Image (cartoon, rainbow, N blue to C red; front, side, top):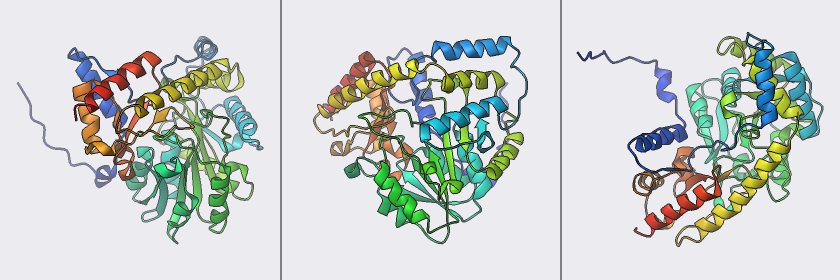
Amino acid sequence: MTITLPKIKLAERMSRLGTETAFEVLARAKALEAQGESIVHLEIGEPDFDTPKNIVDAGIQALRDGYTHYGPANGMPDAREVVADYVSRTRGIECGADEVTIVPGGKPTMFYAMLALIDAGDEVIYPNPGFPIYESMINFVNGKAVPCPLREVNGFALDPQDLISRITPKTKMVILNSPANPTGGVTERAELEAVIKALKDYPDIWILSDEIYSRMLYDNIEHVSPMQDPEIRDRVILLDGWSKTYAMTGWRMGFGVMRPDLAESFTKLMVNSNSCTASFSQRAGMEALAGDQSGVDAMLAEFDVRRKHIVKLLNDIPGVNCHLPVGAFYVFPNIKEFGLSSIDMQDRILSEAGVACLAGTSFGAEGEGYIRFSYANSIEKIEEGVGRVRRFLETL
């Protein structure tokens, strides 16, 4: 017997909550595979490599050593020390453990920053196209989302004047993301310094600096962080973690670095939501940051090969123009010449070509006319996937 349940009356705030389309497309692709369809996965932002053995071994040993219980809400003290040392080394700054909060993934740092700092009506400037959870969280806390376009003509790097022109008396936060998802664009030192110089005149504006792809840079590009400027550091929240660099997406770990009094507020939010990050995962994370880095180096070298290869394959398709990214593991080809919207292109490439990709508009309105491919897959799969896309586009 089928029981029809009454419709749930959700709280109004739920209507303001967005989603991450990558997981929706992944589910649709998996459903097609279950029906016997052949699908090439170029949609999900996840390294196809396994977590390096030394990190896995550390996690296994931690389980055997009894790291299966609650830990401190802000992270185990020795794990926070390791993170502080890592940040000090990679950003060339002095960082203390009292500035670190370890959380289950990258998104909690975004969410907690909004919950702790953004009141209704406060404006938050964010990159567009950009990671969709930025806009979702801004809307959820009833802030005002102010998109700052990232343009292909600039290599999808941030144009400082674009951002500065959007500052108003209501601006409370600026979100920076370099290297960027979905474009692979990188904001280099001169552009970042121009933004920081302007923000020094606005002492009430916070900076959320999403640096989750900070190790994924090519062509000898240097990573720069706003946290490196001592005059503005006390207004910077650095977001980083283990998922991308160390192929640890399933371990669910990220960290935020910020002034100690704000870190206390993050800890309170952890207490009220997740309690703590898994203790054994933190032991593995300590090994990741402080141990052998050869697994990371090998992964980045392979990503570099794939990056150049997929861009060449895409640019060989008549009507497609693909900028060569210098960070992360995504390409963002321009498909405007084909006359289809980005969402139509995404859906038809999946249903007619058997390739899972993402519409550029999954990352904001400025993504119209583009689609995103992740090259976190083998050369063989990339060639097969782009070949299928080419054959489909030739029919339009």
